[in-house]
Length: 167
Image (tube, rainbow, N blue to C red; front, side, top):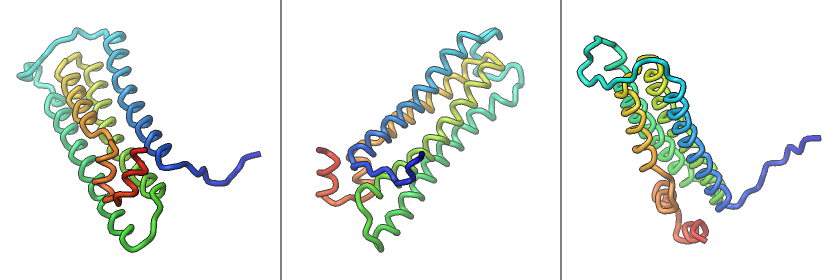
């Protein structure tokens, strides 16, 4: 029999699960790069001048930039909307962190989608430029790692709430 009661996690557990999700998404991308190199049957080359006149040469980096900016923009919009809503209501730290987790997952999905698209195009075309694009996305994604300070700044947590997260 299933228990339909909501799972009550403390704030530290929610932040820890957010980090686990975050790094699992990154690990998936890295493993896909490795598998792609292992199964690739096309000749691998680095074409930086688009000698083959391939439309993906322009589309993959453009798509990556659009997804990265969209991820950051949507994350900021979601957190700003939540800050507005939380000013009017009385939300617990766990509620705030659950919302933050949702915003992180949305941003991560856009970064991961663009990176996976670039990796698949490397598999199809063999151009290392696409792997470079994917690795650049992963590096930017890694710099956006959620930390206690980032959570506190983004959600405008009180001093007591920040202390609770740090313990």
